[in-house]
Length: 250
Image 1 (cartoon, rainbow, N blue to C red):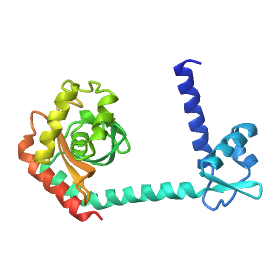
Image 2 (image 1 turned 45 degrees about the horizontal axis):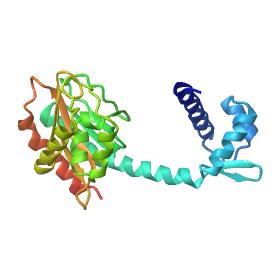
Image 3 (image 1 turned 180 degrees about the vertical axis):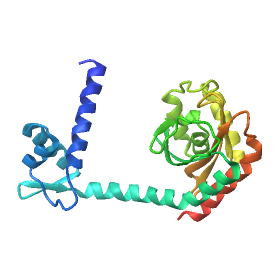
Image 4 (image 1 turned 90 degrees about the vertical axis):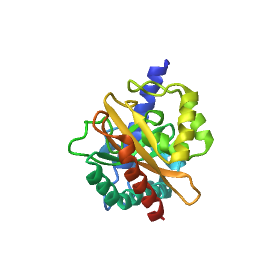
């Protein structure tokens, strides 16, 4: 089986596992395999095999010949709820930053080698950006990614570099040495800049949201047209918002 075929099979399996978990509805306590197969439209034999895998991973639990949602899902849900709290706490400050700069404001976290956008407050006159809530983007090509990496353990940066630094925009940093030097400056100043590294004509200014130990939990940024936004002029507002959030969040 070639790599493409393996990826296709993996994607199909993941889709079926998701469908089985999503088959539970409000009020469902336990469901039998036959009912799960009916709701998902998959053969009973396939449903039985995949249910066994989910039970093994703690995502489902067996009870009297049926299954219920497992405690592992509850644990994962608590992590998601904690991050929802980050968005709720940040939203008023993001809105204020948007009003002050009239540009699009992002709140993002690092997942692996990519940033994930938790919230976006779009500016009326800002460019149409490829970012979306829940969307991902290579960390090295974004100001939020660089802001987080600069205040994270060094191994995270090495992981990003090892995964490759592909060119995303016309001025993406693709040289590891240059990226390292820029992150050193970010750590000194508390501000990260991205100039046409994610998309042509776009500039971004970001600052990290730090925990009590000084490590980045997230980053806040503003994005706008490179020929309109004066990065150094808006940087203090971005920095102030990030520092305020760092003190506000538990």
